[in-house]
Length: 230
Length: 230
DNA sequence: CATTATTTTTAGAATAGCCTAAACTACTAC
DNA sequence: GTAGTAGTTTAGGCTATTCTAAAAATAATG
Image (tube, rainbow over all chains, first blue to last red; front, side, top):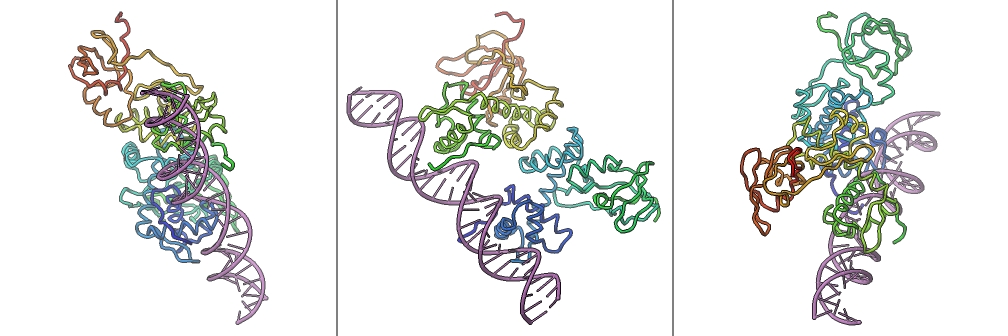
């Protein structure tokens, strides 16, 4: 290791890295090299290297062998990138006729190419939305996130009415599978039966009964209907 | 020179190179290294290098010390890139409220990030236009270009009515200057007087008399009004 | 607690895209 | 037709981002 220059916050790979750390941080305290390598589809050594350079840039706090965590600056940057991504996704569906399963890859490219001017225009045109086309929260320009209380179908009580609030996958096949069964944002759902040992669920969606596998159901989030007492 | 790998046609710099060669080819038989270096704002040696790699990829025909010319494949690729660029420019103005002088830089980035799916969506939404927001021809998917017979104000006969058909600049200052004087696409114009020795022109635009410098006028193209016999 | 297995890091290397400085061509003008 | 200048190319280098193979550290297991 000769010298090492700090990462520049506006590079594509740095932005992808920030996003990945942010996402993984919601599930784990510190984010491991391997987890990042997996999510970013790059090798572990590349992650280590990036972690070093991003620490120099004060975007993450990195401890050898103990993973990474976003600094305050890092989190701010991450939220900016996520805001871009999600505004673009929503726009693609709303104004350009994209299907939900098509938007992720396109937005992934666009988010790095687009200017602040462009993002502002989208936000304006979409009337400053807080949820994207997957139902995920779009952070505000100031980084604020309007979170809701969401549940996984696999744990939501049987017999209670709820609405589909989020389809948490970027995998086109999974999204198509779910939408094919009737899971679209805002659909009314009610769990009818649940098999033990991670078995399938029977669900009533907008009046139609369907079955869903346990695994694939983890990509759905529901929100209890307002007014429907617990 | 050890070995040299061919250029990949989908890289950003290759696409910029193709566009630059295409543009310069309209004015000169073979396109010189220096002309390209100038247009692309990179050094001459970088151009030479790229020329080599693009010849291996059969995108240009390059002769040492005698510049470059697009092959058939190269021209096809160039037109694809230009189509993207211009569709995006038009879209930014039409649907996202951009001013003309803002679109070039944005489109320059977007054209490399956007998928064919995206371009198809734009073309559809804009109803398959053949002219962009500058008034430049948008090549069709098959590469066809619907050219018109255009003239420079500096050479157009005095006293003949015409319409502004194209504002050929990507320089925001120049565009703002011209639009400030009333030169917008479709405006009626008539040359009133012309000073010798590359002097300024007096022009009647939509009923208003303005003066324009010779140099800046070269960025305007006009088209003679139909029906107005010569 | 020692050994094994897993995870992470170091070392060394490749590629695309750029650069500067120096060598070389080609054209132009006497 | 040769000298000088303008334009081009070669040589050698640098950075960001990635990789593989091997070494080192941590975590898991008996």
